[in-house]
Length: 400
Image 1 (cartoon, one colour):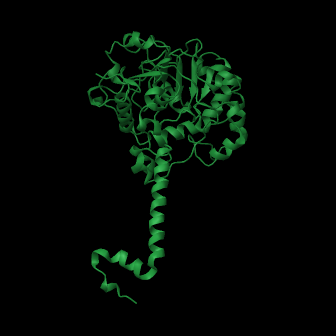
Image 2: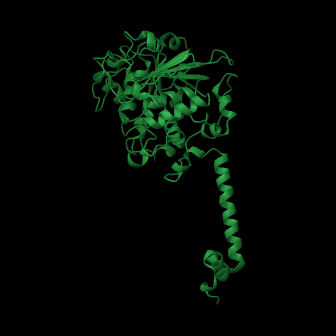
Image 3: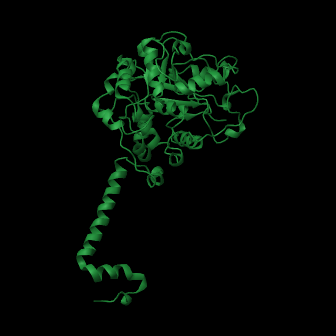
């Protein structure tokens, strides 16, 4: 038998397998290597992983999510989707077949089976199937399944997403924001606020304080997004700053983010117009928050698989390793990504920018308050994402 010592040091591995296994081993090694290469190319081309997330893949493989079996909707020529389709890197990250909202018809056994192993807010792990099913059965109006209806197939839906960032103070952007088709605003007590300006839709995030700031942030609200926890905390923490009630514009859409079981419970009580039957909100009445009884179609709820998808594709932070039980995209990020997956043009106001240190945490702060970072969100990663999407002209980010 040929001695290993006869092999030159720099060629010892080829020498070993030729000596011990012969040509069959060599062919097996080459074929295996080629198979791995083919798998990697297919994986990348199918969009299961982006180059930006390759390092994250080393930590954790991507979990597959629910996708619609219907064709992608037709959109007008102005839509950001055409920009995405022309960019290889963006096309691999974005998927417009992942459901954004959950409602009555989305609660089927195959979805339950797929999501029962994922914890909130990414799924329904450890959640009672009857309680989840009962809540979603109440979202039976067609309006619960979509944010808005296009007036005509070629109508360009322009959306603005509005946050509470201090960058908005003195911005004089109020009229521009209110000129959009829809305005999104949301509530999150620990995030810097966010704003978008490019559609007829406006989204609000964080405490929506209008009085004395109309010239900077506008007054129109089409959609208001929140979790029950952040809503209640914000009403207490920002009462003195003027956040005394949630927006109550006629026809406003209330977007629930299912971060905890209580979000499902609160939504059911709001639709049924009854007190919350269980802790920690037992006895609370949704009218305390909304001030009136909205119609069924005004209630929306983000789909767990959408939160899972945007986390893995856009905001797969290293904080997932150390804070997996609490980490999730901020409310503002979820509202902005919701707008990007439903509107044709999107603008963001009040979101974190490179020079965030130049501004207070909120535009309504009476004294300068620096932005504080918490473990449950990766605000710096979110800021980099908005910057990248702005540079690719997928959204317009207000900066100064």
